[in-house]
Amino acid sequence: MHTLAGAFALDAVNDVERAEFARHLEQCDSCTQEVAELRATAARLGAAMAEEPPPEFKDRVLAAMHATRQLPPRTRPGSPDRHRRSARAPRWAVIVAAAAAVVGLAAGGVFGGIALTQRQELQAAQSRLDQAKQQFAPVAALLAAPDAKTAHGEAPIGGGVTVVVSRSLNRMMVMDAGLPSQPGGKVYEAWLITGKDAPRSAGVIAAADQGGLVVADGVGSADKVAVSVEPPGGSATGAPSEVLMSMPAPA
Image (cartoon, rainbow, N blue to C red):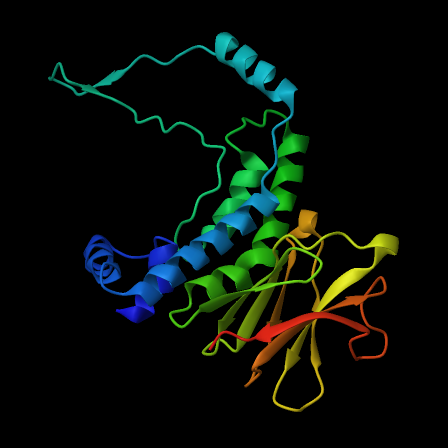
């Protein structure tokens, strides 16, 4: 049952599995904590992509509603019963769903239930959605991995990072969890440390408006994660310049 934690957190289980795992959570504190951490991570990823719709969109949608002729209800031949066409209300919210939950969150941030009436706007939104899918597909796979483990570390300057690791995928994600902005365009860079070996760069942690995370493959047997403060673009020497914090990698 423990391996269902990631799928349960993203609502990627069927009704039977959901009921069985819910009963399991009543007796397993470690799975309860892991589910909470995975859900919080997915929610923060969705919030990073969410956008408020421009105010003028509401007026345009309402105007289009008044100007659009409504179709009459369809009836079944020979029967007075009417078929009602289900109308699902558009949603502007962060959702946690299935292995592709993060991609769905990105889609919600792009469209937000707004009726895009101009072709140019639709093409621009579709382009942004495609970019979001490409960016977050590895994250969705990581969060849905049965062996995904999470850990959170605090930084001495405030904030910290959330780390998610899947050994089966050989993949790790390091996500900004409230680290303060650095002056002069400096950036945060994540590092993988294995034993006494030299740190290996996992990449620069993207800015908050670009997802606020970095995903690295080839984790291997890394047992620690470090975060450093680097000049714009990341370390030029291949070694951390100013180590801000380090923490054990999730087991």
